[in-house]
Length: 96
Image 1 (tube, rainbow, N blue to C red):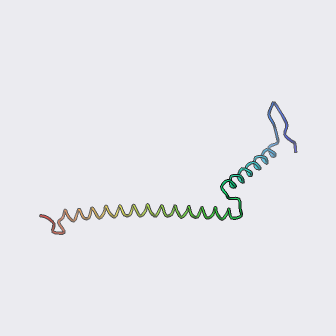
Image 2: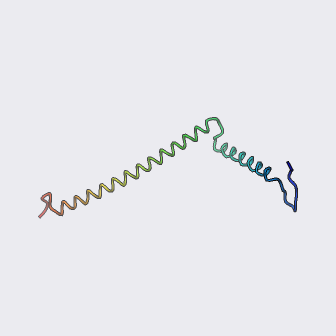
Image 3: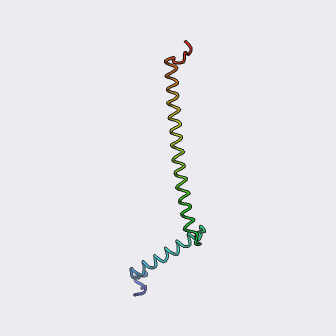
């Protein structure tokens, strides 16, 4: 394997060696980022799964809440229209 060399004021190295260096730097950076958020122990994978599960449950609850709100508003509007129609047709013996 050829080591790094200096050409025109730039350091040159073989592509394979450069890719290994990048891979090592990425791995160290990822480990440092995980350590910074406290995900370095053997329970880290389980913690991430739990967080994903919790996020999925939150998204499902949010979707259900919006569906319920839309259903309630729609039902309310339909009931108001039916009440207005009933009053207009004097179905309840309203004021003459």
